[in-house]
View (cartoon, helix red, strand yellow):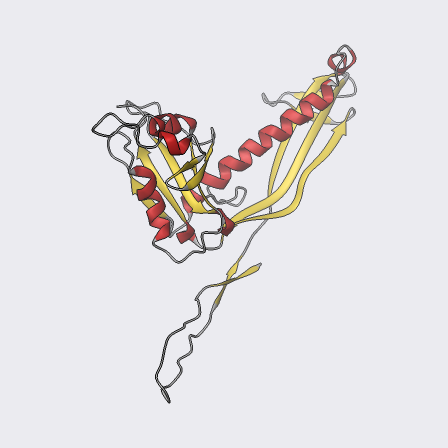
Length: 251
């Protein structure tokens, strides 16, 4: 449970002997409940024995990378159920912008403007977008044929803010290949960690594969590596984030 300052202080100018008016302060409670994320691989011991490199470490690194990808995905679009953290998409109060038509150079400023209009501190503001949208913005031209954003994007910013490219943002298979983009003050995004990347290895347990087939590791000469994390996400102020949806990436 984290207390969050809900209403800011008030400051004003007054004349001599005028009354000073105070602002009543309130706190809201931000509650995080650990969600359990698990990933496991099953490998033949022959695979480990017959490889000159450390195959088990290669598989472990792949597990951790895949779990990190999933964490990024739910941070943006998690449903917030009993078993899944809630992502930006599902918070009431997040700003939304619907982009209809071909992407133009105004999209970044319009999206960021939804957050700039609030009083969030903007301590860590940046865009998050799929790679295909970066390509679209990079090639936007004005009426004279000049690239609108290319020079700035070569410096790592759009509309004065850094941007991060992410493949976890889905791109549709529809005619216009619709997608999303995010902007926010990410200092307002909270990650509550109870335990991250706990690693367990067994050569004797009974496990199940992706087809629900039972595997006796000892009798089948196999090894299983399981990685478990317990964590939750939350946002202090939903107004610190904005989402542009239904963005065309294909005319």
